[in-house]
Amino acid sequence: MDTLKFKLTIAYDGTNYAGWQVQKIGTGVQEKIESALQRLFPGVKRIHSSSRTDTGVHAIGMVAHVEIPQEQFKMPLARLALAINANLPEDVRIVAASRCPAEFHARFDASGKQYRYFVWNHHSHQPLLRRETWHVPKELNLAAMRAASALFIGGHDFESFAANRNYKPESTVRRLTRCDIRRSGPLLTFIIEGDGFLYKMCRGIVGTLIQIGLGKFDATAVSSMLEKKDRSAAGMTAPAHGLVLWKVFYHPKVRKPKLKVSDAHRPG
Amino acid sequence: MDTLKFKLTIAYDGTNYAGWQVQKIGTGVQEKIESALQRLFPGVKRIHSSSRTDTGVHAIGMVAHVEIPQEQFKMPLARLALAINANLPEDVRIVAASRCPAEFHARFDASGKQYRYFVWNHHSHQPLLRRETWHVPKELNLAAMRAASALFIGGHDFESFAANRNYKPESTVRRLTRCDIRRSGPLLTFIIEGDGFLYKMCRGIVGTLIQIGLGKFDATAVSSMLEKKDRSAAGMTAPAHGLVLWKVFYHPKVRKPKLKVSDAHRPG
Picture 1: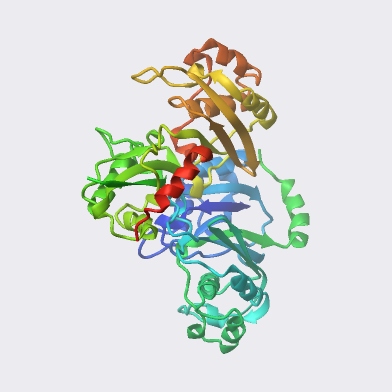
Picture 2: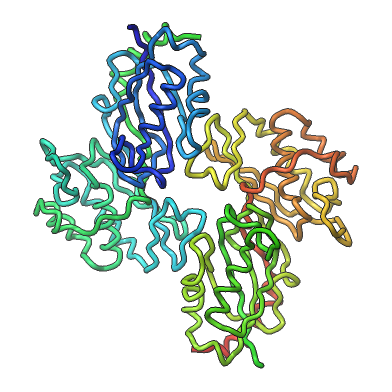
């Protein structure tokens, strides 16, 4: 059966989900989207995502691909996102849907990702932001945090900042290209960008930076933490609800010419 | 019984409240704060606010005053906000608490207010902002909306933009000092500032501006809408959940010297 392949950009409030993936206990965001697609296109089997976010983590720019049987896809492309959204709960939304070449893979073709982590640094939490910011009431030494954040940039073995999972990845070396901290009043935004991330790595980095801001570690301690390749050498894991998968990057060189070909087959 | 007077700055997520005021049906934010205060200081009777927000409306900077019997107030002032917050649900927070002079009245001394209204202008809503933005999926003519918003500035009879309430205010003339529209990607922020607001007036202004952006009215229609002094002449009322009471202003000239006197009596 001939299929058409689509790239979906997905946003969700992770508060009520057991993460992205289909779970034994709790609901994954993935199954909500798969059911919505299957209601529209019964031949859809599953969607493949760039990333698997953890319980409680949010997304603005999750990317996934899906194959839809050509004979079942009869709507104009511009209606696809709206049609899926009409079948989704209000905490999950398809932000964009486009055709992609048959070779495109949301996970294997991703060249990098940007996560953002939000902290509300004030004695009282901000009620409207309580679901997507970590409330840190104590004063933070931002200069020390920024000095420390620079030490994460570049290629490092991040084993000390990743939680153990059932499986061990082939390599624990990752390359961070950005680790910025912005402040706007009580709101701190951590912008962390890299070619890949180990399990809970972003939250390990943010938790450690906050503890540096609180004076628990010196800013320079990051280098020795990285060297030790031991989770217990680094700081705490920041809570899930402050983390947002912000963007997934794909090499434009690989993608653009192929997209043009598939555009010629655009239905509607 | 001698009392001390305090000025409270309050933030809340209005999603689950029937507005500020104590209600016959549903819960008002006010009663949550009064119960929290009474648990700490049994002699507290009620709090007096600058404004009464409607069902579903939020606040970042609501102001209220409260009198606490002097003999019951034994904590350092710096602990007051934390102590009240410990007795509040997580969708209501005391952001600041300070002493104020016995003559201070949160409502009668207010010289002006700023409201912000948030619109998410994209085909799909942003799940993390769904409780505090109005989703307007269609394209908006921002230039027309900005031209129209300028016509609200100054002193006008705003009867056409206010919903009828049980009581009729003495005058329906109000002075707007600001009516700006900012755009940051799909997020539109309306910043509306004035010396006072009629019932649902902000939402009438925003609803009308959005309908101008959609081409239902010309930008210049605002002037004749104001002249007609008739609610049916203007546009729709924007939904409550996009509105946030942002700031309440008090004349610094009146307040500052008095605050110095009360500072001398500061406990702790």
